[in-house]
Amino acid sequence: MLKSKLHRVRVTHSELDYEGSCAIDENLLEAADIREYQQIDIYNVNNGERFTTYAIRATRNSGTISVNGAAARKAAPGDILIIATYAAYNELELEKFAPDLVYVDAMNRIVNHRHQIPIQAA
Image 1 (cartoon, rainbow, N blue to C red):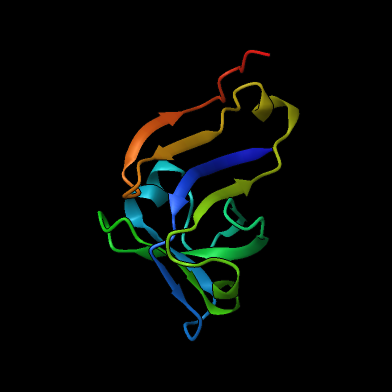
Image 2 (cartoon, rainbow, N blue to C red):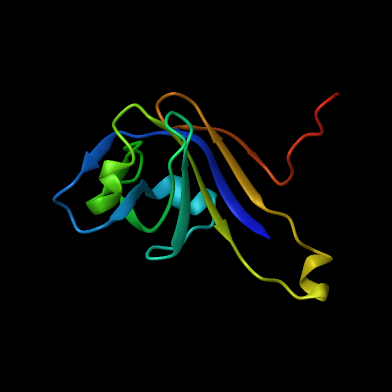
């Protein structure tokens, strides 16, 4: 199940020579309930790249989204990303399940935090 999502964050840095990971503003980590060193999946809206890495903490209130190491070849500053985490739940846990969906502005500041994706009209 989708545990959490940072929707349309903007890449601020791409550091090829840094140890692999994705540095994420501490505010965003907390809002999306992403732990440091947790596996994350990244979907690049600009170029269609999809890849897996792990999260590390960036300075609080910095707006930082830094794609590091080999993954830096898959995202450039200014690219828009969706960062997702997934988890397995048993049937009892699913009764209370609601993902953390975090939406940001162009500076990676939180503008909305929901627990479901709105139904879209056909």
